[in-house]
Image (tube, rainbow, N blue to C red; front, side, top):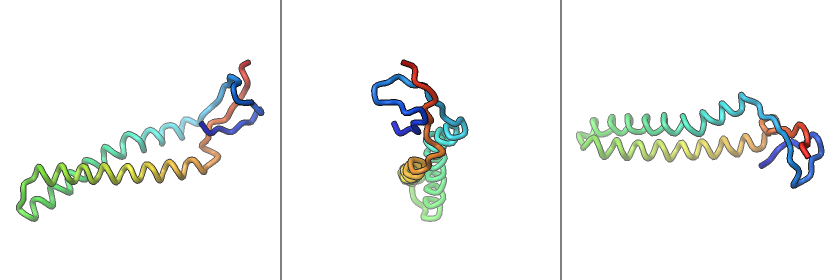
Length: 98
């Protein structure tokens, strides 16, 4: 786990750390809500395409949902890379416990 080591703790020591709650809420939203919304949006888009083409709805809905979910994984990976490079979002070690 990457953290800001403000108290010069060494590996193996037990420590207390703090995380910003806003960062946690945003991360939870990105990991849980975005894939759900993307899959639902993909299913709706698949439904619209199937209606336009006069094809079976279920296949296009499932395919659209899978594509939407897959695209959301790309978004999550990009978010993960961006947040790792942002020092402000890292947990901070506040004290050494032992």
